Length: 235
Image (cartoon, rainbow, N blue to C red):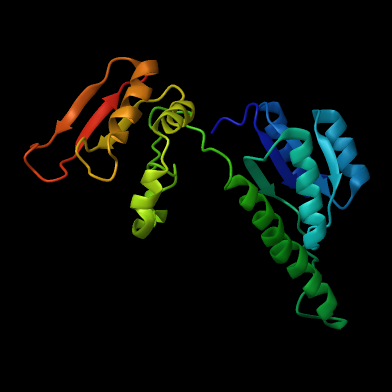
């Protein structure tokens, strides 16, 4: 993973592991938002590494949402989140002074467990709406026409209706943008009745930019709705 240029959020970043994590990410070129209830400490670290400090009590759902919204406004949607906010009182369940107070144990759970969940849930929701980055030739992403969604989320019952509203040229542009410098492989069927020529238009849209392509698999065209596999090599 190369964090250079990407937005990162680190909780508990005012000191300890959080501060070191934020520093390491900043050195690697990430745009770092440092979240901590100790805003003065977060500002001190942020000043050293060129990040932005944001006050956040991770045990509060409202605080988590507001802090991540502020981080997004500063650096864009985070692609990196590291939860370091945590406490660990050095106490036994039963010590010399009796049992550990329940309130202290609840504080540990609220920060270490609930807080981690709250920040993760808010950040993950935003991340889910971002395009996946294909940064290496070994990366693989599968998307389905016309939604550009993952194959496992296709609702096949309304697939024909969605195809009727498809935009092959727009899909081709989006595929080219997402692929970047990687190869594009298209599984397609020239006589699939639902597409009505949309396969060819999609392929033409990619070919207009990538140029040369190779048919890696060509099935018997006498087979009903036969499929082919076409490769557009990395540029």
